[in-house]
Amino acid sequence: MLYLFRSALILVSLLPGSAGAVATPTLTFPFKAVGTPGAGGASGQLTVRTLSPTSAISVLTLRGLTPGTPYVAHYHALGAASSDPCASGGPVTLGFPAFRTNAQGQATVLLRADPARISGSQGAYVIVHTAGNLAVVPLCAAVLRTAGTPAGQNAQSPNAQSPKVQPPAQVALQQTVKIGDNFFMPASLSVVAGTTVTWVHTGKVAHNVLSLDLPGISSAVLQPGDRYSYTFKTTGTFTYYCSFHEGMSATITVTSR
Image (cartoon, rainbow, N blue to C red; front, side, top):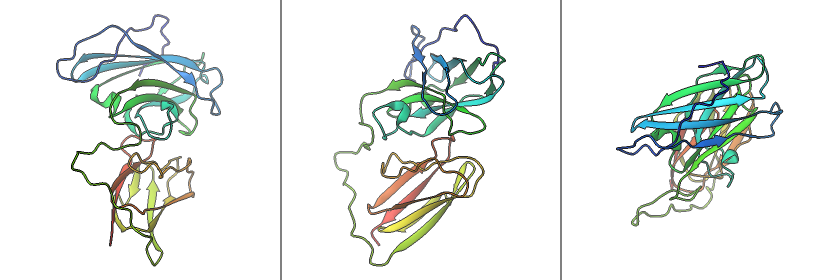
């Protein structure tokens, strides 16, 4: 991590992580203040350069944050909740090193990683959070939106069958999933159509429950002790995740009976 603000911006650029990638001219992505508490007059920019098919450098240059305060930043794959990438609630694909601002509220943060992890399947954005409360988001930068599968839809082969909608179960069915810090328990669950699953927050930091497979799964920010429920009526296997924490995801398989 780098704590010293650089007056001369490091010039880097973004390329898809395909085989044979080479360095290209610089692309810069500006941050916008999201408007959540703690945003103030924060601003900055992100620059990224692909050095090889498996190596890219991302640099955050940030200012106007709270002086001497710990922050974290994450790449997110584009979610399905909104046409605005910064409001789409996508899963975390890559985390920057944790950092602390200097006495002027400035920071420069460098990350080297595989470029394939930057873009996600449909696009990407970067969110800066306060380390003490990940629900506080001062800054967001829309990085890339790729063509192809529209947000909120899953690509299917021409012969794939659409999921079947099942009638409500005759008897109310209930299942519970515990939300811990950086995990869901159980990580894999099988239920019959018509089951209501309730997520119970048993951890100590903020989490949420979101899904690209089923956009209807979309909780608010959950604090310790909070609950969120969703009734599954469509058969299939669905992945859900917390958009605050890298790798925090689980699956639910819904069967007809």
